[in-house]
Length: 148
Image 1 (cartoon, rainbow, N blue to C red):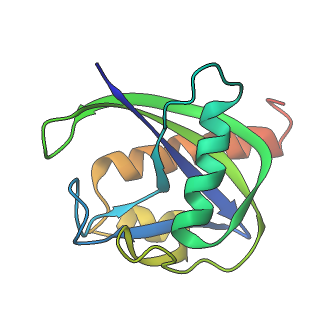
Image 2 (cartoon, one colour; image 1 turned 45 degrees about the vertical axis):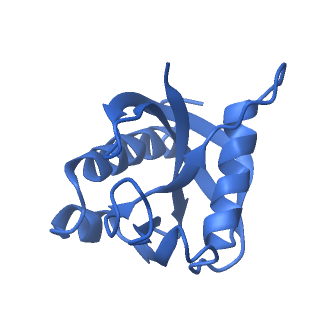
Image 3 (cartoon, rainbow, N blue to C red; image 1 turned 90 degrees about the horizontal axis):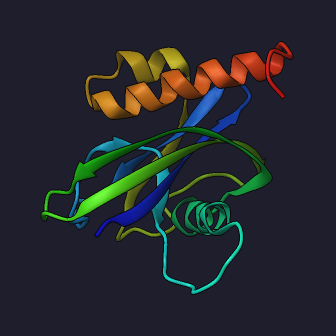
């Protein structure tokens, strides 16, 4: 059995929304990450990943993302406490709000970082850098009309 987690690579004005996970988090405390969270059981439901992502980003950072999201990639891992997780990343666009650590139990800080800042940051784990690289590639293809 897996827990399903969603993350948003939120882009605005040449920068990506990056959070620092709270030291109170069970998995990856203190690490840089994309905002997101676990999908809750809802029975029969439509757009559960997208709705979860919108809710989690707002709960963690106080910002709203647009309805337009693009699938980036999925991975699986075992969390620090032994839980098997499927993680799905979406490319998202900022709609409104200024990011801050709204849920201090989950997020220590939230900031906009350029692609270069994320890639050069020694505190950014490899999976975050990979998600930003893949998201940036999709973003560039969308901008040039290579994909819709």
